[in-house]
Image 1 (tube, rainbow, N blue to C red):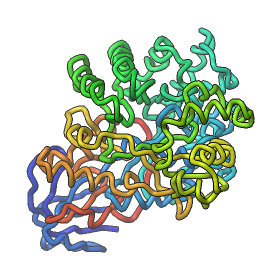
Image 2: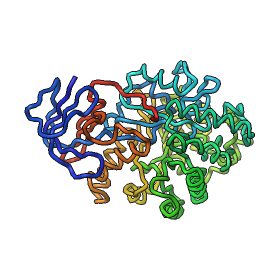
Image 3: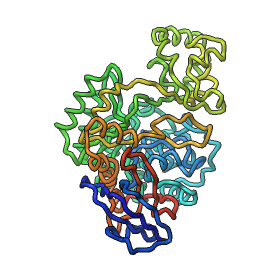
Length: 491
């Protein structure tokens, strides 16, 4: 099958100015670019002078964590905003490797009954995903917690030297089978027991595979600077490409955020450390993160037990009293087996339950077994918007694409990349070619995707048509329009 896209302004993804041309696609690849007015094809798209760019690459997504790859393989929320490639396995959680064949590590994020797990290794996972009609290309990192919990049987302690050796072997095999790198969730309960020494040891094997290390920082508020310094030390010690996941200026930590940006620039090379960021003012959290720090225990089971203790609940309620107004506006994004709560604020749920704000919060935690997730507006958007054009910034949604009614869709899942373009162009922070490069060839090169990220002859035809006047996504073309998404491997 062949496709001819006529009369477009080609933005190649490398920062060059647009050029008028026609683009011919044969099978999955771009075959010719130029004046092709006499060329014929099985299908013709009239470009009408609009822009043609490479498909956008979302380097930090969560559709795997919520199992939406299986329940909604079309992943239409990504496709509709021009995304053709997504990367999962972030924050220490991945679908593989599974040492004991279970997905317990993502139990707080998804209903595990929705998927029949027929894989253990990364290779087996990728083979299983190939059977799905994926609407995007998908690649994965290896999750720290996923492996650590299996090795320690969920014990929160330091790893022994023998366990570290086993762990490193698991990571190496996963990289050999195509994983793009390794991720940690150091800001979560399960990641706090991992020392810097452990992270350096587990990250070191990535260098030989050109893999990336992605980390959810230990702290994004009061200890932000120290957390960034740790990540810089790991990146420089291991000489591994590193990525700070969903880096953003949270209210109260703006000064540390600005200092961190300077520190990253001054202490790492441009090929060493990046961060990903999204153009929205809202974060997503597991509902247990709303508890006081002292109540965030080692396991969901332990926290659930404490929520059944009246004295503990009274103490939690007392400690959260000053945050009642803030908690009232928290919005429920997902609530397994309690779907009617999705989209409600805690304040609205409290009225439904005929109780107080804090009592409603505790009830929802218990009703959902702490598996609910929530949206919270906690980002200094003005500061964030200025950071979008930073040289070390990669644009990512940190979003997912659920089936209808499965999850509350936030703008970050439906409008991250168009909004990024709108913001940086309207504020004159970047030119259109520069902005397109940031969401195409820059992440492609960082990930080692040799056949994607640019509009060039011989490249895979993952393409986007943008409106010449409003820069809105007119059409997303995946692999020449005739194939489903590929399951990507680190090559």
